[in-house]
Structure formats: structure tokens, C-alpha cells
Length: 438
Image (cartoon, rainbow, N blue to C red; front, top):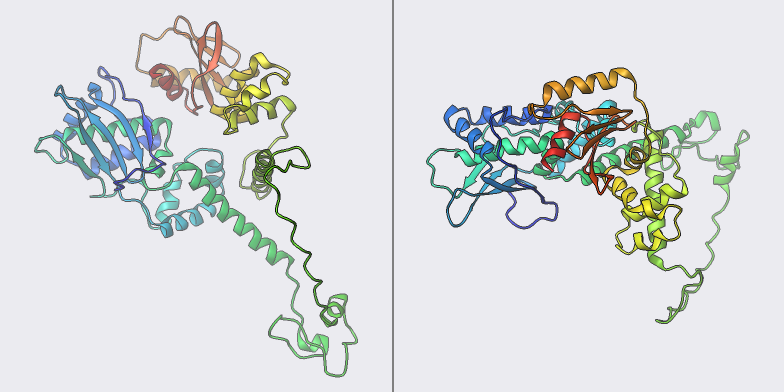
């Protein structure tokens, strides 16, 4: 369990109290987490108490980081106390083995690169002889209460509430095991890139000729036939002739430039930071295109128009002054803030959902309507008003929008205008739950 501060640690708002209803999460990863937790803690009494505490709203905000999940417990005393669930982090070689096994599975690789955590990743982990879910005795509770049960009800409640987080963000399971999501994707992409480079090298390597074919003796240093002592081979190729030429010394290095003065102005008039940013963007785009060409990505990266690229820069640039600088010269300054918010939540797909209304095929909405009616337990919700790909809850100022990427995007009304309200989800029930909680 990590004891010190870690920049990868994330915080989540406390869950409000719930009256009745299921306490276990609804997604595949959430249910798998709960099953592993309950298998490791088989006594029913602590589990029953823990489910009651999980619904009570007595746990404060949750923190999730490498090796731990924690929260504050408020039980009516003057000072809250801390409850922590510890889970061993995976070693570096274990992560390497996981990504190697994952790269052998095209479907799982494509899902991860698309931002999903596929259930079959568990099989890749088993192939690598490691566990993502808690094994027996791995989940270690630690609480400041005086309850004699082990685990106590607060630790069990924290385990159930962590399963609620997995409903919307199953990638948190990787974080608890020691890998934040961006690092995990970079490591997987590195494995794919190295494999592609190795395959390209094998395809481009020339076949080594035998000594009999060239009339010479085999050269063990480079794998080609060496020339006989009395001159070049009669059947020599241009490559053989090139190798036979004498080495030419390299030219002398040019002198180093004079160090710049402190008051020097860039010749181009462009500071170094924007240039570095553009170079980084170009590298990221090239890598995404390579991933697609290797068959590891779903859709090719599409070129961005001027408006889309303006929104992208304003949403992703670390300097907070950049959106203000871009607002005046852009084509639609009054729409930039909403567009930036949409990009931050969903990238180019999120921006398209903000700006485009369309009519999905019938089966898609039939499945969504069934999921909302059977998966959501609050019977007080009004019947949604459906217009194209937008589902609006009347009187609640809430809306779900279905994107062409198959995700549901939450929106809320602000001063008569619809604003993006959170990350997208595959499941409309989970998207609506996050929207109502927010």
C-alpha cells in the first residue's frame, strides 16, 4: 500500500445516502470486483452491515490511488476517522507481461485504445499469471473505528462504493494496481510500436547469399559473401559493389554557433513554447495514424478544420490565457467556451455531439429505452422527450445525447443553453446516474 502522496491519486465526491435498491454496481467490472471482495470476506454479517453503511451516506469523499482506496467516516463524533482498503501494486515486469499478452489480442487492444476496459482483459492478465481483481487475502482493510469485526462495516462499505466508481470508470482498477490510464495506454502503444518496427525490419532484411552463390567465402560479421582474394565477384550486384568501396573519412564538424544573447529576439518571431507544442501535436498525430495503420485502432484520425483545431488548442493548451487569445480571431467567439468544454469531456467526438443533431437507427434507441426502463430504479423520473439523438428530462434541466461513436454524453441546462456536464458512457443508465448525482 502506498503511504506517501502520489500525483496520480484522484478524488471523488462522497456518495449521497440511498434508500433501498441494489448496493452492488451494475457494470461487468463492478460486479466482478464485488464478487472478488465477497469471496475474500465470506462472512455474511460484516457484508450486511457494510451494505447498510454504504447506503447511509456516512462515508466522505473517496480517494483512489496506487495501492489504496480511502475515505473519511462520519459517525456523529467530533472528528471523522479514516478507512483504507489496501491492494498490492503490480511489479514492472508484471505490467510488461500484461501488455505483451494484450497485444496478442486485437479486439482487446482496439478496445483499450478506444478508451474502454474490455472484460477479456482479465483473460490476458491470467495468461500473464497475474490478477487485476483482488485475490484471496490481498484486500487489506484498515479503519480507525473500534469494531471487532474484520473487516469492519466501514471497510466493506468502502469496497461497495468503489464498485460504484467502477460503473463509470473501470480504469480505476488499473490505478489501484499501480498504473494510471495514460501510462497504461502509452505502455501498450510502445509494445505495439516495437512489434511493428521488428516486423518491418524482418520484411526489409535481404536474404543472405551462400558462399557458393557469390564465389567467395562466408563473412560471419555481416551475413554476406565476402569477395575472393583475386578481385570482385563476376556476378556482383550494386550492393556488393557498394560494400567493396573503400571507406571515406567523414567531413569535419561545423563550428558551434555563438551562444545567444539574453535580449535576442527569435528570427521567426515565434517563441519556443508554441513550436514545441506544435511538434508534440505532430508527433501524437503521427503515432495515432501509425496505430491505425497497424490495425490496432478503430477509426483513422481525421483532419481537423480551422474551427475544430482552434477548439482543440484552447481546450488542451496548459496556458489558461490561450482561450482568451483565441476567442477574438476565431469564427464563432460566442460559442468557444461551450465548445472547449465539450472537447475537454469527449475530444473531437464530444464537439461533434455538441454541434450535430441526427437521427439514429431504430434498434439503437429501442435498446436504450429498454435499458433506461429496466436498469434505473428511481420510478419518479419523468418520461424523456426524444428528439433525434437527444433525450431530455422535462422539468429536470437534464439531457443525454447519443454520439455517432456509440457513447452517451450528459448535458445540463444553464441559462437556457445546454452545456456538456461530464464524460461519456456506453451505458445510458450509467450516464443518467452520473448526471443525476451531479
